[in-house]
Length: 405
Image (cartoon, rainbow, N blue to C red; front, side, top):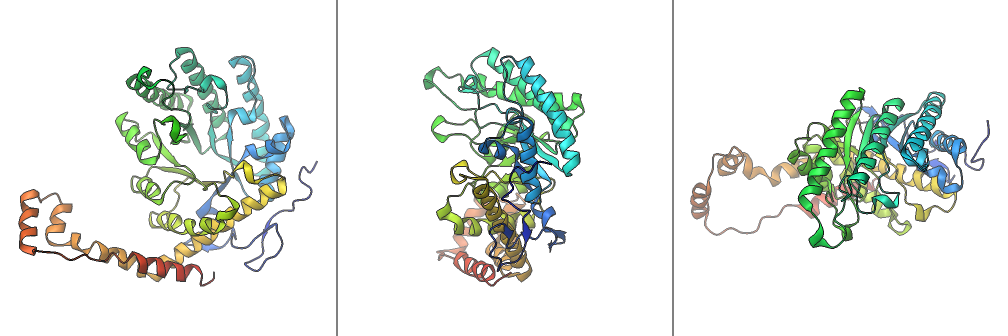
């Protein structure tokens, strides 16, 4: 079989003192962390679009993508319909290309022991969607987006994808603002999500539907972040039908909101510039600490959405993936150490101890009103500031992080 990246060997775990560039220092797939192998705790997925960066197309593109997946030791991938099958002059022809790519990819899945974590429709790559897809002012474009989404859902079913993702990144308020009919555009987006859920049931798609928030802040996204996505789904009565992706770079508070609501779909790694590598390692710890507190990813994964600008060659791309995988592996082990150490968890309990008794408990149990709280405040008199011990918590975590793993 043709080798598309002969200069890249299969990446192996070699420990923290490894000097070989194509080796994992911390990501040991079989290491047990919090009761499960690391590969199950992190569930990394590689976007198939990587091979297209290096000049491959058609069947070579799919074979090269699977080779990268295999050399990184991964079983999960993500795919967009248009990355698998370039757009044709008509939707009918485009659909035929998607069907052809689906058959090829299904065979490759079996050969490589791989599976699609997530499939989505690319509703942002064509100029027709420059003013939105499900929020477009054109009924024809809205229908075209719906047809493309339906075919992508069929692709997800054919590949046995764990998740089908509707991306709201292109759904923004564009043009002369007073001319925008927000009410209609929001309602149409709600209708699209409702139709997608109905179609998934009709097709017998057994995977999970998810919604990806985000978009260019300058264009005023309708669903800019994860909490907005949760609110949007509740507003449309779709909260039970969808989970929500966590975009790369999102703050830990958004991850916590999704975990508390049990609505997390998958996480994207934070796009990182070379100068911010240390930030990536530090950021992974609180994120994975939250994941472990809530029992893991629960069927989702971590998507290695590595930015284009730092990958001039295939070797650059693979090393960048290794960096991210090692960072999250180190973060996972540090998070487990924090939980086992117990000091941070004890400090968290002490921080809110006032709400577990007296007037604080009455607040949590909805037995207090403003008069009750006023009476309590009058009895307490003047209060001094009380430390939340944040600096000490960070000191504890830093000590555990750099102690060695």
